[in-house]
Amino acid sequence: QVQLVESGGGSVQAGGSLRLSCAASGYNYRSTCMGWFRQAPGKEREGVATIHSGSGSTYYADSVKGRFTISRDNAKNTVYLQMNSLKAEDTAMYYCAADRGRWYCGIIETGFDYWGQGTQVTVSS
Image (cartoon, rainbow, N blue to C red):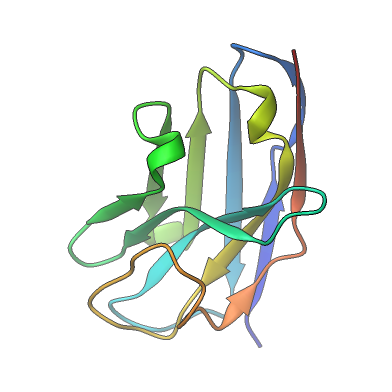
């Protein structure tokens, strides 16, 4: 049974930083994609960043490029999201997601089979 557990959310002022972590248990697939999605109140969930376990390829939403960095530790089955220069519009529930293995990740929800419960990020201006 695959479980994803996020941590690291919280409240921060605009311009600040946060680091999210997502630890996967029971997750034993190869060539996988893991990543982060977010959902703000009244909006649809959107892709933020994803990363491939084999190639290390990363994918970012335009809105976070240059500010957020995704990384993963394959040995620990953990993915991280370093968020710098946070803006009020980054306020959302952030969800970790993982798939069962493919070569291209992208930042759309299709293909992601497992989801965490989410961690709240609140940025005050």
